[in-house]
Length: 128
Image (cartoon, rainbow, N blue to C red):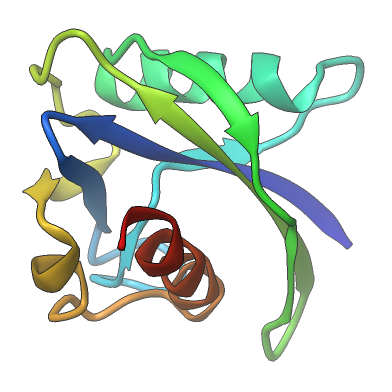
């Protein structure tokens, strides 16, 4: 089982989402950004590191939400979401092909990776 963090980043009432590259596993699917927890690092440290590496985005990591367990065809993940805030909406795409700030209604229109779709349901509840 792989432990992965993800960020529900909120800025001025909108939520950040990123689209995976065509060569990535789950190509072209949208996700809440984050990544695999490395040995010796906390979930929060992982999230801060991944967001800086992949998006050059600094956030304040807030409350954790209930982790999501999801079985893909060839692996299982525990996706650990955190509600985050950003003081600056600017980002630099380094690992994704697209990204943006979306209303909750707009998030529902995106083609999500399966595990992230489960997190999206939590986001809808949180922000409604």
